[in-house]
Amino acid sequence: MNEDNRYGSGVDKDMFAGDKVSSDKKRYGVIGENDHRPRRTFMLITLLVSSIVAVVIAVSVFSFGRGDTSYQEVLDTSEPEDMAAGVRGFIEGYIDKADSEAGEAADIGASQDEKYVEAEPALSELVPMEIVVLPQQLIVLCTNNSDIRVNIDMQAVFYDSTDSMMSIENGYLNYLNPGQTNLININCPRNQDYDPVPYARYDISYDVEESSNDDVAYDYFGDSFIISANTGVDGTLLCDIKNPTGRSFENVWIYCIFYNQGEPVGFYQKAISEMGERELVDLDLARGTDYRPVPFDDYRIIIGNTINLQAD
Image 1 (tube, rainbow, N blue to C red):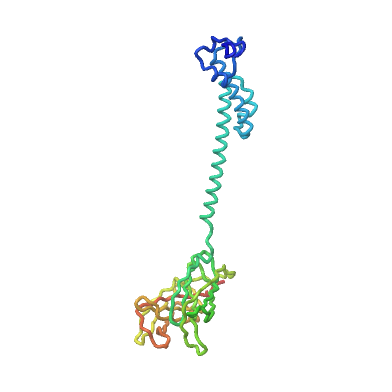
Image 2: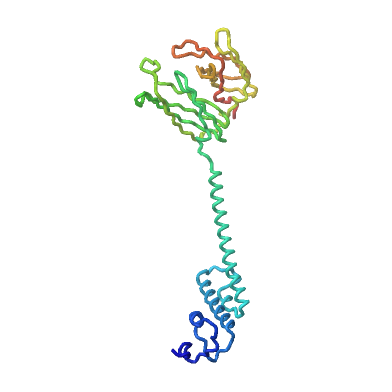
């Protein structure tokens, strides 16, 4: 092959002396005989054209550029420096918009998490139960930690060792005021002769709902009572109950749970038909299943609902 055919027709052989001509042909094409500009100028022009093509593609794909750098403004740029500035502005605008949208999404997510954390708990979660197991009954202590008056509907199911139901017992508690503790007395299984029957286990379920009765007559004042007590010579618990509220109440129930060495051993309840400034009450002995007195070394007294006689 002669030298002219090696470099192509009309090509100045001296122009390519010492260069890798085959590589240059692939990258830039053949330079004509009449084009004598420096090769770096040709490279600059090629890069500029490539930049314009890249901008057109970018504008087509990312149509949400910054407001002050529009599609037409980028294309109208004539100088390389202005073109580069336009491209930078376009890209910066897109990045700013993406960051802004990501921030808004994060704020929404945080807001949703905050709502979840601050969601109001179920009413039943605000009325915890404490179950005191006695030979003849279950005493279920209910404390209202909500800010509304509630009613409680409770059911206990007792099972034998074969997991067959032995008895179903229901209990109710109305007008439990905020901050008040009251109780539900659930009888354990008994036969037809009313004798206690041993059971293997029990399940308790309950519903708590807001009371529809907002009468101030059912406001609770029992936590203001002052109680002192001691054991009498016959073993009964003698209570001196003072009422400093200046109000009179009717049907005030006094409940007492007896303990021996930390374990509950008995229960007694008594009603005061009308409670004035002071009332003396004797609470009978704690008794076992045979109704004989059971020794105790401690007790807990609970004042039930206080119905205010002077309420308007």
